[in-house]
Image 1 (spheres, rainbow, N blue to C red):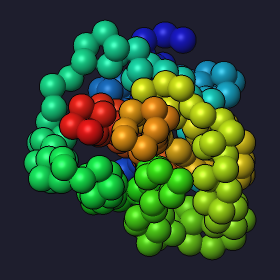
Image 2: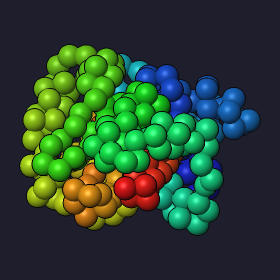
Image 3: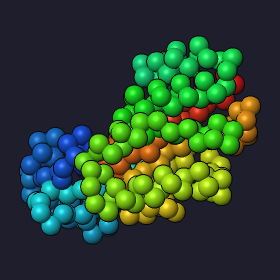
Amino acid sequence: MTERQRLILAAIIEQHAEIAAPVGSVMLAKLFGVSSATIRSEMAKLEEMGFIVQPHTSAGRIPTDAGYRFYVNSLNEAHAEQPQLPDRSARAIDARVGTHGDRADRAIRSAVDSLVDLTQNLGLATIGDELYLSGIGNLFSQPEFLHGEHAQAVARLLDNLEPWLREAAPNEPLNVYIGSENPIGKASGATLIISRFRSPYSDNSYIGVLGPTRQSYDKVMRLVRHTGAMLEEIL
């Protein structure tokens, strides 16, 4: 993939997250300062690679799970090469959770609630043998999950999330399961972003968010990774 194709793919993903609609060549042409024909040519190549697709009702394009995976891998590499200092959102989580440092359960719940507020996703965490969920209304208010098979698939994923986490035991500080990568609810169009951390309850405690594949991965991944690391430090 060329550098321009990589940037166009990133722009499609980021614009789609913002507008919840297919992204057209005219919008991208203005962004990159080139002709619409040039953008359409590059989009055709990205489509051949399987990274974007054209919904039958639109002239624009949306990312595929493979496109999201390429983008997320690029973000992971960038974050590894140049770790970012905590921004205002991360500092807000620290301040809110820090007041509960003497109570692990309250600290974890507060961290989940902070992620819900900042990402507008569903937040989740393991507290001992319990799975704490917050923000279910956020999840089902997303346009993808208002009705139909996606909503049913997300509901199945939620019903089976706790046993799946126990079985899968994700072992990275940050784990991202995109759409069809989820072993449950493959057709849900949902992404699970979770961080493993050590707590008084377990060496394999988890905190994270569940939302549509269409989301701001850079922001959400940074916040989930930061929150897991912060909880491990204070607990």
